[in-house]
Length: 173
Image (cartoon, rainbow, N blue to C red; front, side, top):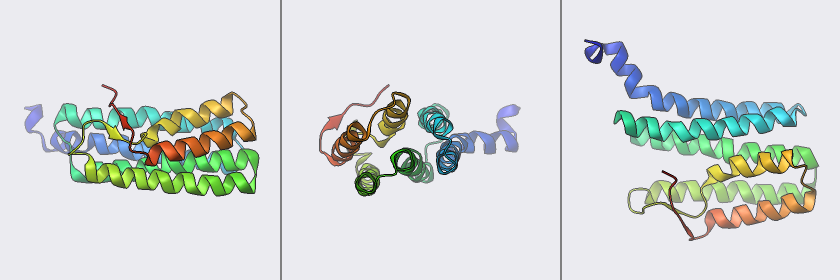
């Protein structure tokens, strides 16, 4: 009886998209915390985005509700949560113009990586280039570790290069 309930079917169809939108929300909230100099909370919300991103695709596959809309929504959310939010956080922590320029390149590389993924996702097993989601762990850890400007700059360049590389990364199961 519950499986035929229209409300249940609508929820089942959209629950993975709800996780995706919560990921986007968490990334945006991280940016709001960062611009208000609350870097600890900004870092925590980036990590929360990682958790939400972990579940959205798994829920969609489990429920058999994967969709093209969900895939595109996921990439847009990931660009905010794992591209823009870490870039804003690191720029505001250091307030350095050279790092700012590197972070622009970092965000552009993240956007390129996600667009390439959307084109290749059905043709390639795993990932070509480092998944942008990894930044959701790297940059909060750098903040928690109180990493200096030089280390952060090196990691920004390395992460940008790895995202647009042709290195094959396996999916985490």
